[in-house]
Length: 216
Image (cartoon, rainbow, N blue to C red; front, top):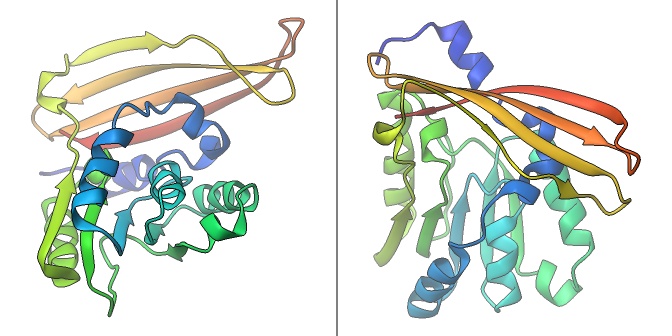
């Protein structure tokens, strides 16, 4: 894959500007799948690119010990907020590590490692191989690795979307819309996301524009 390094750095921001809204728009349809494999393999579990804790917290609620790895400071801050709202018995099962999954290393060995829908944020072959090596190095001999891949090859070269608004705890709403550009030559999908926050009256009080990207 050949791509301008400065543009890649911009796309690597991920959801840094909109971390507080990330879990609102994330689908939880995959949680039973991860819980099923957690039941088969047991603790400890490694959750790479853990975001604001969507999967890690669900696993911890069901009794599993989880090491959650995340590089985004904004996501880590949201994760910590979510941990505070949990009973200590649950939050104590989670170890939150600030690290990039391309450089993560651990002396612990895990029975299960998961990357839920975030592997594409590694947008070069070298980054992807580094992640796979890191996972292999810290899995138990009979450990499982679940890699959830985005079906980028099915994306049209240009598309737009707009999602129904989600309600915030204070009664405001937030809407997410965006533009997606898939480049079959560079194998990169660029996303330009727009988050619009409105008061109950409908008045727009905040707009956030976030560039993100994923490998196809």
